[in-house]
Length: 298
Ligand code: BEZ
Ligand code: FE
Image (cartoon, rainbow, N blue to C red; front, top):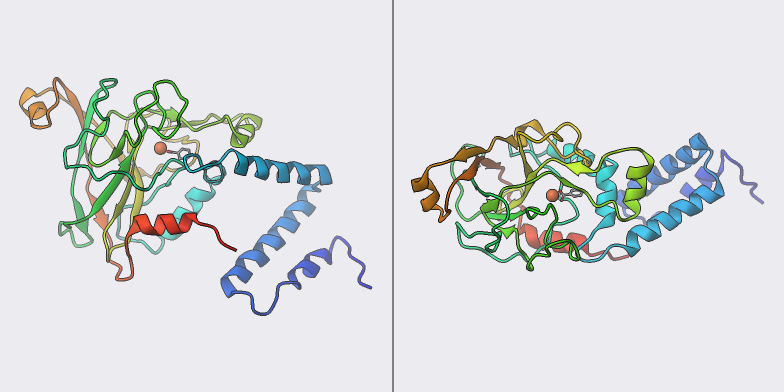
């Protein structure tokens, strides 16, 4: 009979992976088992600590639903989401840099007319216009690109975070192009992720930003964020999403004629950014891909 000990238990587990296992599944699981075992040996993990971890993962699942993804948030605060985007950008060279999806993307946002006010008439905060071009890698403008945009409301919560002060209508602050003035805002710390943030003395703020998912058949999807140049949190984003190329200034425009063009009364802020898409014959509808990606099967 085999006698398990600290050094042979890892191979005992690895040897259980069957010969017909999908090669990518094998690569990921083998590395996960090796690193998890090395980690347990390094920190001398106790049974109670392992049980705490299991309960923590259960709590992450229990607080999650179709509007709140605590698992995504956990990957975000550990810097893993940022790292996977940085690794993926190695094959996306030439396109606008990516950033985090975050836990508050909702597919199914309504298609808005260009110039539509995605605040749905909210009069809090100041108006902001973001304008720019979407081009291919050679600089030629691209028609028929979908820009799926979402941002927090002036109260610093996403519309999907129901039960917060000043709840907003379904899909408010989601849609296209014309936005309210973005603000710095905290990531949620009322769930298990908050335990890690609290235990490590970290702050939970993100610099003000707009989220974009930009897609067109035949081009790589861009999942990115544009950050306000004047935020004090650019160097300490709680989820590590900031890249220098994605930071833009907003200028205050006090020109009644320009405001009237956008149907705005008084002054407004304006940000300008051009996106670059990289062609990829196999790329397809990103919204469908995100829905598929969200479903888990054995
Ligand atoms: C966000 O910007 O929506 C976000 C991203 C990561 C974690 C929490 C919030
Ligand atoms: Fe966000």
